Image (tube, rainbow, N blue to C red; front, side, top):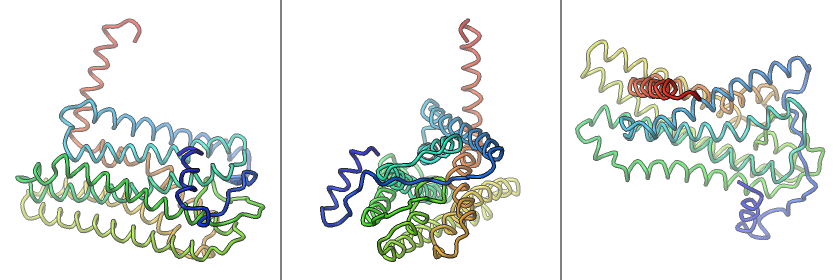
Length: 332
């Protein structure tokens, strides 16, 4: 979202709804300030993780788009999950890497934009995970009617609904943030702009923001979390009653890995958004944020895609095709 986009948002909220942004207001992100040698190690680690995130998620998107055997609802949702992981990691990690080399202040517009875009993709991911769990339930429990129940129209509506939920969440929190004034010093003890560490810096009344933040987080985590758990519970019940021991073991292994990834994301988000701000140790807040902004986008391609047999077959076929092209061309 550009500065123009933020301007349109301000205009849509009306002149009385928000504070007039002061172009001179800047935020300093403390990030992981400390020993220079430690910062070098952190830079290297975060860079490697980010490159793996880019390679893994972009590779999954390209593979699904170019492999006809992956043109089914399940892989349509996996492609969107990879896109969301790629985007919301990119909102945070490049700025984090830049600050580890040389810290630069972030403008008011830049900070609000980061809050807005990150809020979209984080919540979109939660609803996509719930949608994917529901899709797997339909495939396992209703295989004969699956293609009808998950028609192109239905799956498009589910994905658009996920992005819409993310957009509405971002609008609510950004509108609340734009009502606040910041009198300085605006030193954010965090590595990116996020609602919880920004609220204590405001010289305005922030209790309404805290209530909205906790309420939205509780609603999103509860509804999507219950949808995921319910879907996987029905999947396991169906598999247990209809398949062999080997099939049960495979299904349990897949469900367990998916639920572990969900638990990591949801526990990190719940720790940050559902507890009173005063109860958070600042370093614990950073650690929780690292998990769902840096680590999870890297892990998801391996957990949701590369464990899948069809994805691995398509990947091997793509590698063979690339190798064949390279052997027939001298520039490769």
